[in-house]
Image (cartoon, rainbow, N blue to C red; front, side, top):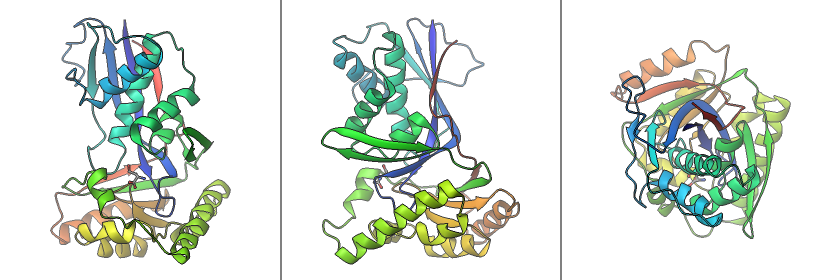
Length: 299
Ligand code: HSE
């Protein structure tokens, strides 16, 4: 038996919703759990994961087994087909955590429900804004309070395109969080609270014209953008080319432009501008929302 877990990339924060908002995107990792070496086919471009505690998929799977009073089978092998860029702000760590937990849960006969899995995932990740949409799909607003996760999932309009501008350098979340201040002003807190509420209601009611205001942020982007060369220019160009809203994806370094799917020229224009700025090695991805979230199959 081979268990296949499919997990989407996610973009967290959406500017103002620091550590609380996230949207799942149409770019997926596939993780395979097998009790034998029967996955050596050349047709699947998978990589065998090292069985050690530094590997987030194994660590998460082992944690679920532990919570259920079991130990990971010694002959378990895990493989991955990895499409989500690593350390670029697209939820690659969360995808590993959700895959490890869902694969382990399936191996044990589904003892835990989705809420249990989200809670475990949030304990491992530290905040729920990537793991929640990776698990449920769509847009999820979530709060981690006294060890419990309170969340609501909303489907997101398929009329939106998420154009992700991916730099050719890494920025780890831990490193990126170190640049944040430990204290912010009351005025800045109000600035963000109002905008994150506006973001959620504008996505739900499809008032996309509000997004340029709703993504604005004073809690993290002003600090993080300093380490991304030409970010200001890219933000300005993205708005000039008609994006509804532009923000850092998660802790960066990727920048995400939320566009109307009828804005067909956006991708080409931003690609051309990146080349002009000598940023030809940066990737540009055109993604949709994934309203389904992670899934498990037996193959
Ligand atoms: N909310 C997180 C952060 C997302 O901004 O640090 C990245 O994990």
